[in-house]
Image (cartoon, rainbow, N blue to C red; front, side):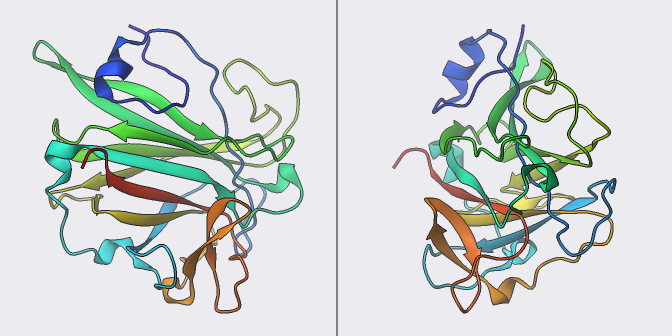
Length: 245
């Protein structure tokens, strides 16, 4: 079964019926956040959280005390509107591709269906369209995401495997992002609100989250400082809510 799909607004049942192969969109996330080298490899994700759309400061997502059990019966609707804080030169950006992993079972065997949720073009700087999708939570009480990050030169013609990221001498990484209802290692708690995601490379420091609030800039959610300026490092924001009331 081919389990790769295009972005859209779908749930688990509809997703698992699909079997067409789709092009992988590779998103552009690539600043020198605080002075990373051109061939540095992404090490981890820094994630901040706020439960309010306007005015409330972010906190480290690791400080969320407990998950919201309401997601078990309702599922999670996840929305992403694009990357903010990106450099002007498209090829200086870090490539980011947001993926969702849908767990399901075939008999006693656990499987994962990969859903390429969002991406943008590192050659042109074009942002992928804002998307929202539904992720089930009842199977494992968690939402499984991953972020593909790329740095270095963008060269050569796009290929099917890297349709918009380019070949060249780029270095790529895949970083997991798991939001869970239970307390597990290497996970963050799943609650309703806004998660700001920042890939960190070799010499990058985690943002001081209390310096930033959430605002809409150029039709995208973005971190802004006390002067209303967009944070000077690449990031994207996930809005997470119940899929059903």
